[in-house]
Amino acid sequence: MKVRHYNIPIFIPELACPHQCVFCNQEKISGTEEAPKPEEISEIIDTWLSTIDTGNSHVEVAFFGGSFTGIPIILQEEYLQKVHPYIESGKVRGIRLSTRPDYINQDILDLLKKYRVTSIELGAQSLDKFVLKMAGRGHSVEDVEIASKLINENGFELGLQMMLGLPFDTKENSIYTAKKIIELGAKTTRIYPTLVIDGTALGKQYKEGTYQALSLENAIDWTKEIIMLFEDANVKVLRTGLHPSEEFEDDKSLIAGPYHPSFKEMVMTEVWIDKLSSIESEEKNLKIFVNPSQINFAVGYKAKNKTELLKNYNSVKVFGDEKLDKFDFYVGDN
Ligand code: SF4
Image (cartoon, rainbow, N blue to C red; front, top):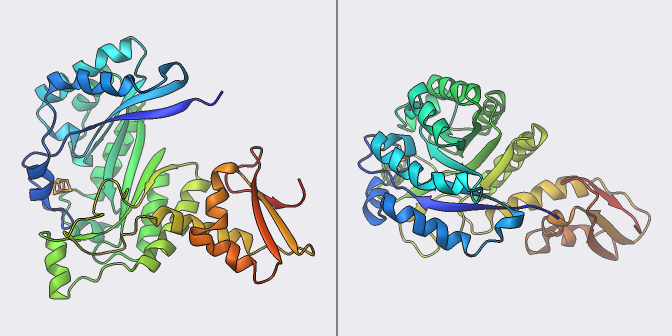
């Protein structure tokens, strides 16, 4: 039976962040949501566990939202201590967290190791020196390289998140960033097209006309290529674009940028049309077999790919075949 993976999310917003990333509205991040107190952690975990069949699941606790290793050490330890009994009992298999590359050093990693943190995700954003500088991140490419090396050497799973379309970013730059992420040994990644939020430095640049946001079309095109690079290198893409339930659906603070609630589906539609356009079949009623997880993507967002194929075929049907790898397909009667 397939083991199901669950993350128990615990949102730890960054309090009084000293940095000035151009895309970030700190007021919103630190003002509206409060971090749970350490004594509330057990209740959060218990509530989630009561909804999960733990016998057949791999459950992890995920501290996300800010830079976990940037909060005071005492508080980090208090949070981790609260998760520890669940790890000891086997109900929770590990802890994931996200942080900044310049908030990693050997002492911090020793603490995280002690409490059995398994995965560390760093916000790398861009590995092009100039783009990173202009993003106002306040850390260097070298910081990402050093932190990645330390994380790998200490046996954690490394994740490196990237953004597309920051000021002065280009498709070539972002492909370079993706290749560098692979080279640095990341096992996971998240791809975030840059969105322009009111109240940010980027919002100001956009209103002044000095920054042009990435179009949805370009964001899809760049992401499509980058996803395949990661796929070929076995780097797991945990997220592509923002999740509609999390942000922006009804929020007036988004002023520009390639946001779409079905962004991932649109990207995967393009990945699949590239593959399916190689089909040359004498049979006019086309039956395409793909891995079941890919059926919707092969059919396409709003059946785009199916409609395209129907220009050359009388009918097009897409079926699932468990035996196929994620991006393999065949045409036939099964
Ligand atoms: S994105 Fe940048 S400015 Fe915003 S909270 Fe994180 S480190 Fe601070």
